[in-house]
Amino acid sequence: MKITRDVILDLWPVYEAGEASADTRALVEAFLAEDPEFGRLIREERRDLMSQNESIALPPDQEQAALRTTQTLLKRRMQFLAVGLGGTLLSALYRFNAPWMRWGDLEVGRLLVLGVGLAGWVGFWRTHQRLRVKGL
Image 1 (tube, helix red, strand yellow):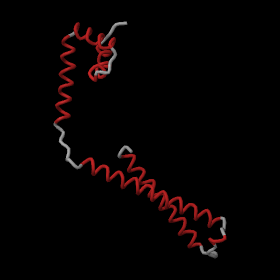
Image 2 (cartoon, helix red, strand yellow):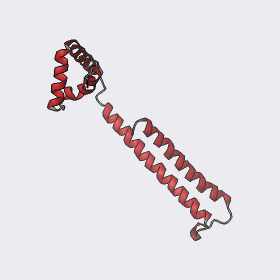
Image 3 (cartoon, one colour):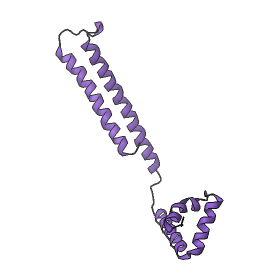
Image 4 (cartoon, helix red, strand yellow):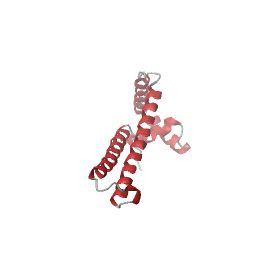
């Protein structure tokens, strides 16, 4: 099998990280000895990427702000889940005429319970979507 530049490019991150086996290191070094121009190009590209990453300046408290936002969203999602489950449970109990849920024939009570459950589920879903956008 002929070793190509693409194979060396695939092996390069492992080689650079120092995690390559002795055989892989020998293979990469032998290829770069035969094609020094390619080795120079790879190293220059790596150096350019590193200089680009160093130029990004982040505010010092950005990690803490992101953590607080995530914690708030997770707590809110659990609160909405509890409201949604509670509303669903109350709605089910109301539907099956649990003895302690007899409010007479008031449809307002049933609609209120269903509204609370629906609001909880909608809030849970929206918060869950916001967390998915953030990658959590």
